[in-house]
Length: 218
Length: 218
DNA sequence: TGGAACTTTTAGACTAAACTAAATCTCTCT
DNA sequence: AGAGAGATTTAGTTTAGTCTAAAAGTTCCA
Ligand SMILES: [Mn+2]
Ligand SMILES: [Mn+2]
Ligand SMILES: [Mn+2]
Ligand SMILES: [Mn+2]
Image (cartoon, rainbow over all chains, first blue to last red; front, side, top):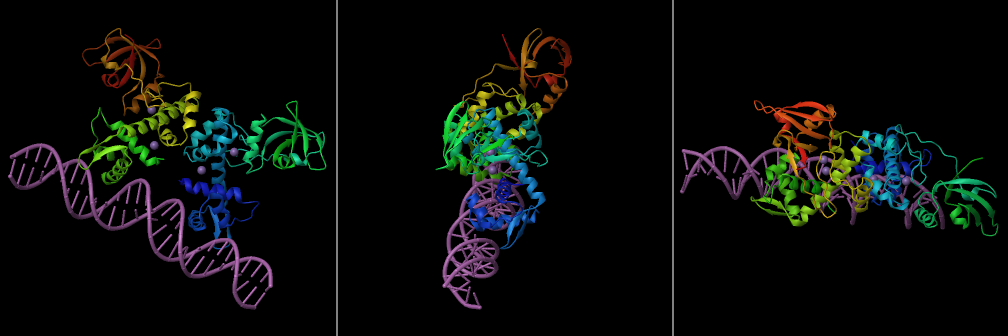
């Protein structure tokens, strides 16, 4: 059985590693708000358990085994987030910290039953895909709004990582995941988009468009 | 913020203390499957935090403050148990260990929303009352089946503490909390009860009757 | 190519929560 | 009253997970 701390490290590794590249000790420390020396200690332990490939001074990557564990924690995190928003009526912005705790509850059966109860959701409330029991993630055909041209349409599926305040903004504007967007016009001068959502005409700054994820149907 | 361990000790104190009597170090150790010396350490810490009245060699009792914390953990435990049984379709016997973890999740808002989602239940799946936000418990008019006489009726509300196997038996016999019971006959010779539940005639041994709790309507 | 700057690891310390073994207290019974 | 049994506490150890400070390794540029 893995400790809460070990699980959080594995999850951090997963989020930080881009395409088979190894992760630096400092970046993990920064991500988890811990000191690099603490990270080194934990990496040694995780290496001992064969969850990571760790070589002094050379960086760390998840092993196959470690990646699977990470994906299972992420699965739990996202299913709980879905529960909190769909069933308990929390807002998008409120659920992360609670799910950060709930993801560590130990019970295979619990998470499978929760999955069924929620209707086997594919995406969490932030539009992130929910891995299945085996750790498989369904790839989405996601684009940023900024990549669309006039008259193209899409469905809002989420925002880029680390832009929680954009979520709040959307909330305030009464825009939800799943809403349809049509690009009415792109202002060349400053990259502003004029879009239609729920029959309302809205203006999005370039920055918003660079962070808003859509699923497009071609 | 209290640790998981502190919360489990306070809960143990609550369950062990009968009517203003203080609790022995050994009984806590026994209840929590820990060594008495470990318990002493924790009691000192809880006394420091004014959660308990502890005097060397003299036993321990919950302070008002400590009792309130204990009741809030118990509230969470029982609400989560209710969730697991009512919404996720767990059986009575499966939920305790999971709730033992869930009860430690930190979020006022979570538990209030869960309460609403469940329809503000009064009793958990084992028939135990769920304290409200302020720690108030509604007193039930509970009797043991063995206390009833011929022709009296009641509603099954639970079983006595520590008789989980009776729960399993009831499950197997397809008897649920909330089912009505009517005493048809009491056999004087061996204390056996002949009762009617769901239009079925059943025979309960004296031991069963000593452990089955009913709410009676007079 | 040799340092300075940065990154990473090591060494040592601390805290929480458990344990074992030994000391101390209390209670009861003769 | 005193002794023994049992309960409880104290003292010292352990493990996990964190930290600070110092040592060691790596990078990169003048
Ligand atoms: Mn977490
Ligand atoms: Mn999410
Ligand atoms: Mn617990
Ligand atoms: Mn219960």
